[in-house]
Amino acid sequence: MNHKNKVVKALSLTAGLLFAAGVGLQAQAKTFKIAVGDGGGSPQEALGKKFVEELKERSGGKHSANLFLNGQLGSEQDTVNDASIGTLDFSILAINNVTPFSPTVGVFTLPYMIQSLDEAVQLTQGPVGKELVENTIRDAGVRIIGWTYSGFRVLSNSKKPIKTLEDLQGVVVRVPKNEIMIDTYKAWGINPTPMAWSETFTALQQRVVDGQDNPYMTIYSMKFDEVQKYITNIRYLFSIEPLIVSEAVFQDQNAATQKAILDAGEAATKYSAKFLAESEAAIKEELVKRGMQIDDPANGEKEWIEKATKAVWPKFYESIGGKEKLNAVLKSLGRDAV
Ligand code: MLT
Image: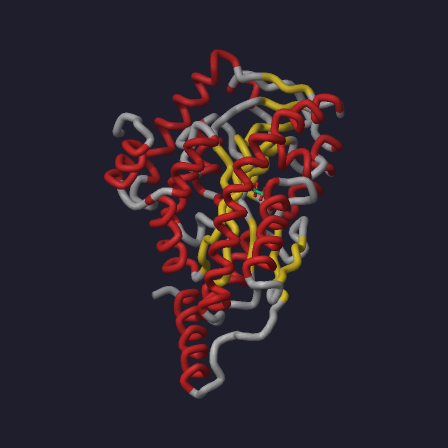
């Protein structure tokens, strides 16, 4: 058992002892804290607001929660640690920032794995998603109770239009501290710069890095158009951004509150898919109005797809749970086995 699991187990045990001593599980009204990596207008905020509204309603007005946007409560990866030890209640963050704590969720970060919003919905809300929820409780001490759908991560930069891998050479790109994403850029011929999300805007502004990748909605909500000019419409990762609750905090709630939390997460997830489908096209147009230039990769992204899938997928078969597991996921999407 790793250190985090031990801490979570110890906290759960303490809750159990308190219960046995007659103190009981949390029954009093509570205002939870929710860390949010992105800014106002983002799919993360939209999911968070819906969750709070639903939580209030489903707990008969007893419980509420406040959102802390723009990484105010720490970097996305730090919030996983904090939730794991029970010092933070909830966090909404990109799945790639959960992978270092729970490697099997890396299946969602394999380049070109998820090819549409429908596939993202199918995987997260079906048996694959349910298994990953259990794995994440086991590995990281946090429970995924909702999924934000934010769209494909596209590549932005301040230097020049990029359509081919040749154009990409020499461009300094920030990536999350995620091995799969780091290796994807290496497969494309450059050494990316791993950096926490909370430091990214400043790094782009000060030209420490030239570019980064994130969905249109995120680029908009983070005001990256102020510091980036060019976008390449690559579709290598569909960004899934879970709402997690500290397992220690969750286990400390009575059954009615646990049910309200789970139901509110489910309702917010459904809303998130609708929000993305209704907002993304307008946001893309808005970015162009604000002066950004959007280019499609040349030749239907063929060279990007081939390089990334060939070099990256086999390296991560083991960490995501084995090739058989991956093939089961591919089969569920109607794709060929690897
Ligand atoms: C990242 O690039 O680290 C994440 O995608 C940030 C986010 O939550 O949008």
